[in-house]
Image (cartoon, rainbow, N blue to C red; front, side, top):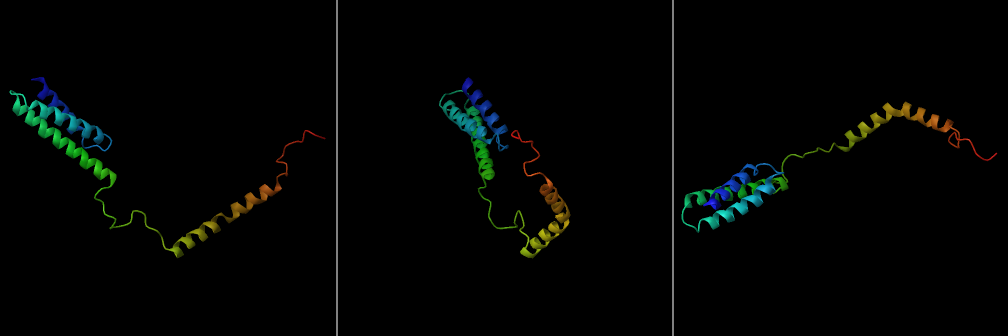
Amino acid sequence: MRRPWAALAFAVAAALSAWNPLAAPFGLVVGLAAAVMAARSLRRPGARALGVAALVVALAAAAGSGVVLALTAGVGRGMGGAEIVAVPPPDQTKAALDEAEARTREARERARSELEALPKDGGRKSATP
């Protein structure tokens, strides 16, 4: 008599975790295990209605988890449609790079002259005379 209740409890736990992509693998495994438990509980007379309910909830949870996992993996997404990242045309890219070069030219030249003004040994004193 405890097996249908346990199967129903596991089926409900699987159903509660079926919607989240991180918990869907748990929902799939527990849903399948609960379905097996529910199917085994149907062989015994007694709480047959409870076993059927557990089986239905377990199979629905396992199916829902499978769908969530498949959608998370990208199954069913077509490659058509709008691009996620639009690539700018080459002339627009060149204009943006030219503008950035002009904006940073003074700072780059100042940094280059400061590097050239440093002593060649990096400012370290030599240990040998």
